[in-house]
Image (tube, rainbow, N blue to C red):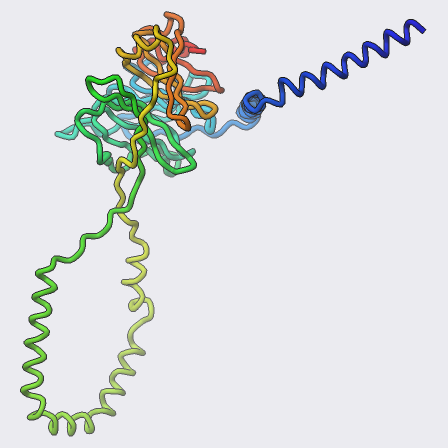
Length: 380
C-alpha cells in the first residue's frame, strides 16, 4: 500500500510539474521564438553537413590568386558577413577585395577585385548584407552603395549608385535589410549630437523627364501655320485632288496591300519588343529617418552613450545590435518601439572593427590584419 502511494504521488507530481512548466515557461512568446530559432539552427547545420553547395568558381584571369590556400592574402579586413544560406564567409578588405571563404575557414572559394581607381575611389566599407543567395549589398562611409551579384558561378560587380538624401552631418555605419518593406537600413549618428537614428533607404525607378514647355508651344505654332496654309489652298486644289483620288484609288490600295504582305511581322513588332526588354533605371534614395529614444538607459550607460562610436550592425530575433568597442557597451535597438538600451561587455572586444552573426551568435572582429577564425570573438 505504501509503495503504491509513493508511486502515484510521484507520477502526480511529475505531471503537475510538466503542466506548470509549460504554462509558466514555454507559453511565453519570447521563449517559443528562442526554441524555434534553436531548432532552425540545428536544421541549418544539418543541411550544411549533409548537402554542401559546390564552391563558386573564381574569375579566370591570369592575375587571379590561387584560391586553394589564399587565406594569408586576406588582410586588413573591413567587413565580414556570414551567410547561413550558402554556409560561407563574405569578406571585404581595405584593398577593395571581395572574398568568399568556406564555412570552416580553410579555403577561399572565390575572389573579386573591385575597381578602385580614378576620382571615384572607394571610401571605407561600413556595412555588408546578403539579401539573396546571389545578391550582396555593401555601403561605404560616403554613401556609395555597391552591388555584388553572382552570375554563372562568378561574383561580379554592378554599377555603383550614390544614396540620395544624405546630408554632410550624417555619420552612417552598418547595413541591414527589412524584408517586409524591401528596404535597406543603416545607423546614423548626427555630428556633434547624442542623437542616433535608423535610416531607411529604398530603390525607386527614375521617372523620365517631361518634355520642355517651349517645345510644345513651338509645335502648336507650327500646327497653326500649317492649318492656315492648307485652308488657303484647299479651294484651288479640291477639283484636282478629287480627280486624282478617283483615278489612283485602285493603284494606291493595291500598292498598300503588296507593301503589307512584303513587310515581315517581326520587323513591325521589333520596336515594341525592344521597349519591353529595356529595364527601367533605378536609384537609391533616403526614405525615412527614425529617431531612437535612450530614456530607458541607466545613468552609467547614458554617460558612455554620449561618447558613442558604433561599429557593426547585427539583426537577431527582431532586434538590432550595435557595439561600441571603445566604451565596451553592446547596444540593443528595438525598431518597433524606437528605443535603444545598452549593457557592458568584456574587455576582449576592445578596439574591434565590426560584427557579424553566425549560427545565431554575435561575433566581433578584434584582429582585422588577417583572416583567422580565432580573430572573431563571441560578444554574447
